Length: 358
Image (tube, rainbow, N blue to C red; front, top):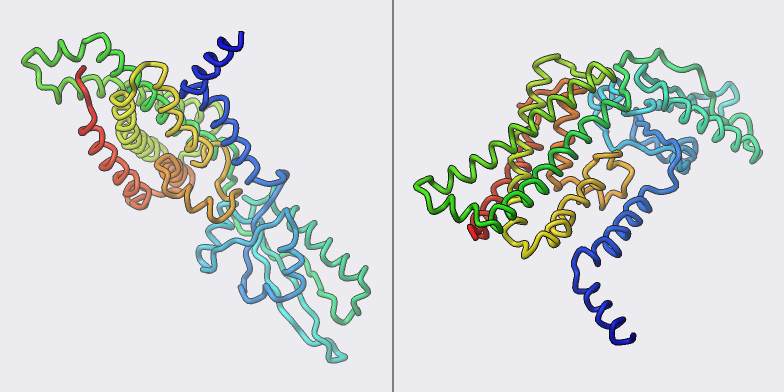
């Protein structure tokens, strides 16, 4: 019995899939969701004057776990974020002299129609800060005066489907490209189909292109279905209509070609079918969690956000959302497409080196 137990334990620990699924991936989930924090509603706000952070009113807002100060300092960029619903409000803090000569603060807020769900969080927190000042016995002449809100900025409502659909599309493209290509070419190699192809006068480049093209066409059909269902069933935003639709298809094609390179690598380095899932998940799972697929990466610490920025799925998701909702065009997504292109160059350079015909 002890010998069987020892042998079974050795077999389990020697199996990459067992170790990965039993230890690795649960730990990844625990770490990622632990970084998000306590959950619950939250909102970002910007300061009209960044130096106001020394004021006790602003310090009170920053101490709230529900609020986050936006990093943006440019006035034009702040207004654009406000119009798109990324900010709950812009906070203006002015000072004035009372008749008795004391300094009094005037707090003004400006929100937008796209931030209707976030602004109440800031408004409630601001009221709590003022109430705390009164409870602590702060003299009335030092208490801030909160006047009514400034006229709201007109914005476009940002619904959940506008965030989720590009992420799900990227999720689908990455999964199909990596797992589909890896299993397909491993199977063709294992059954000696590639070897038979290679024995014919057909160029091996055309053999790979033929198999890859079939995968690309199938996934583009999937992308069309996902976008159209999102548009007509859930009112997914396509700012420029059919132009945006075709730009999203181009991004889908671009991302799919890059992701397929990882499938080629995995199909070549895998020794058996059972080792393909661990290798594939080693590349895909961190991106599903850190690539802005299910939730915004702004929930992560700053150091982890920097790591997220180099992931190819994060760049594809960002480009998709910029084109679909914010009205950007492909020429405005040069940063995201550039990083994807660098991944593609490196990936295919490795794939050419390790690709095997048998």
